[in-house]
Image: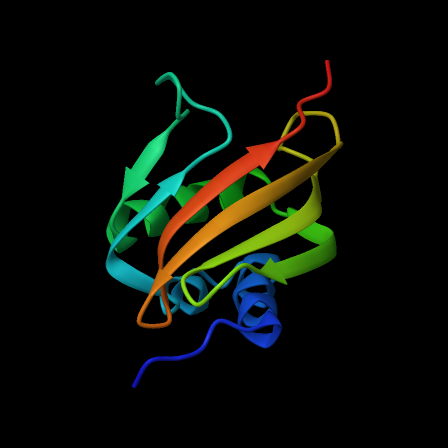
Length: 126
């Protein structure tokens, strides 16, 4: 059964990010998903992670490095039955680093109610 893309679904995914529940996050992703991260070595897309295993590893590493990472001021828009947009402020303090707060957004793509692509952007101040 295909799950509709709704604000409640996007909030549920975001709750997983804010509680650092990698399994809950990945339960919303298709096996062949991809995540284009805001930063990374490859132009023009940054870092591209493919598949639930790689995305899970990246998230686990990130939460270990930034144990208080959270997304605040969340707003979502549903584009159609396969696309959505989320805007937020991501905050945290990396181990041994300075606190940050960046305005950003995710462009979401779905198939059969599961995330197939998460394309992340944020303003990097500096």
